[in-house]
Image 1 (cartoon, rainbow, N blue to C red):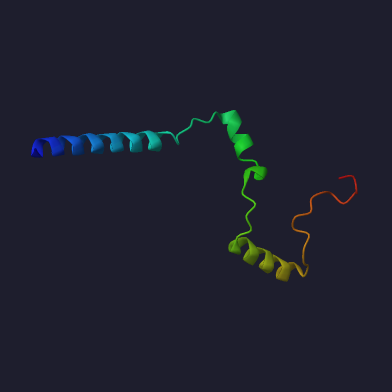
Image 2 (cartoon, rainbow, N blue to C red):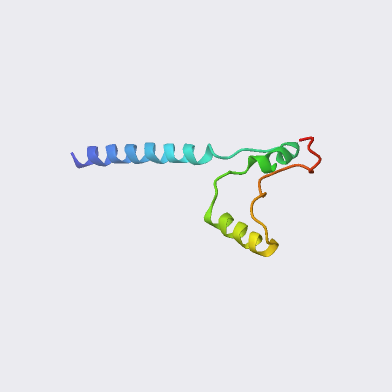
Length: 80
């Protein structure tokens, strides 16, 4: 009876370990050098406004003496 319980426990543990190994290895990906430039583009960054970014914006506004304009892009010629 005890042998049967240990056998079932060993099988369940082995199956769980196998699933965990498969899940851990599925996150690996090979990226070619020409793809790295695309993935490093600033548009690939998260847009979440963090507390750190808010503090940096506040410090920049105080240093520059201006507010806003941080997200506006363009050269000022009106062509964008």
